[in-house]
Image (spheres, rainbow, N blue to C red):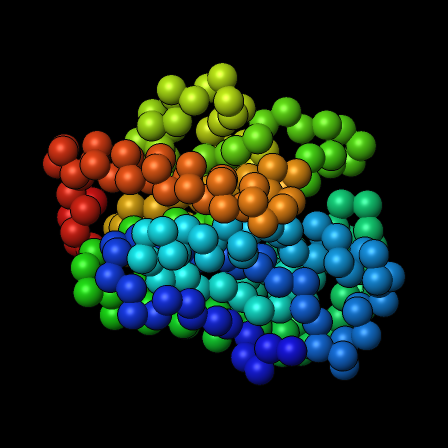
Length: 256
């Protein structure tokens, strides 16, 4: 059982990439009684991003990069949402109503933010501020292959908000592998879905290169596939950064 709500892995790593996994865990402290969900629902993709943490850990090892990850379920608090968002403490996720989140008072919602969001947000902010070089923000997520009964054909999504420099470079580095992976921009989610909070708060606002990587979770269901996809993403990131380093990206914190 986690003794804190945020974990830093590879804390002394020097690579400019700082990895983030907001939905790394399905864990809920016992006092929340699984928010009234069945065991199956509380372990499903609505409670976390299956495989994302494993991929993020492999990437952290391969890049020698630091990783900041939440240690509790996004159903308690979605750390990729600001406190004012109605979906920060969701009352429904896809087909599942969340009984333990219904009819919460504003005080209870604020208590969730204080316990789960702010420690995560402040830890990530401090990790970026303390980094020995200009950091590059890369968040790792996974998504379900079937959503509301519909099959998703996209396999890897490269997501961005107003700053698309790193996303463009990664999409370009992925082009030679178009016959192996269905890679798409801002799919299966995008800025209009409210999923770019971490990118905006910690990347765009700090004028740092940033991107969100979404992986269809059937592609990372086993340890071997998690390692394989992480290695592929590492090569795409390496190529993208080499491309950007060959141009004037104005990467300094105050220059965008």
